[in-house]
Figure 1 (cartoon, rainbow, N blue to C red):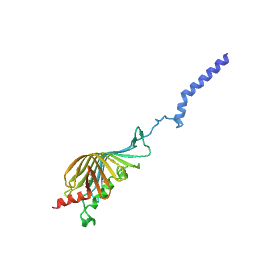
Figure 2: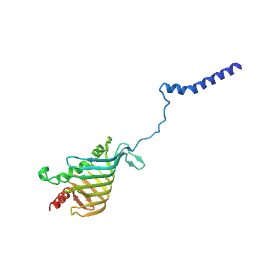
Figure 3: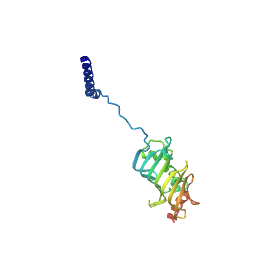
Figure 4: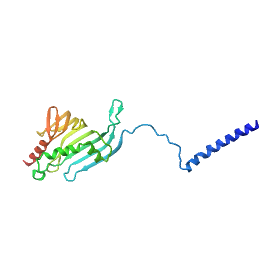
Length: 222
């Protein structure tokens, strides 16, 4: 009986020693107990803020207040295979159209490519310093300006929201648009078709940005 009691006391003493000193031994050897990390996925990544990019040789600018890369939703689920570039307050300012002698082409040719480049999802990600590959863009607050001879910024598109709807079009909502008659209209929905030429399609009205640039330039030269 005395032997059993001594055995129990020895075992208890051994566990007590291990309990007191084992954490210190592990710490001194550089090993730490495994940390429990929450299980889940990061859907909103790498926020960029206050971006303002200028193309020195043309004066074209692209700026936005903030952007992030997210996963699109379908129902209650996120689509992990796709990335969406979400942008807050995107403003694009097109340069003043070059003269024919300077550009070697028609006045309107200076509009199509700047618009195409400015609304390319990959280029916008690069401007923001984001390295994720994105397949579409979603914009909260979108403005497109043209520049006059005296460097004034003329609003051509002001939209509450804009989203890419295919490889060559942007769907917009709650818009104010400048027409080729230099009047301003307000529409609930419009589409920016990024072809050649670039067109605004709204309520059966089409605005050719090449023509609009030429009209603005011609008006200034009258």
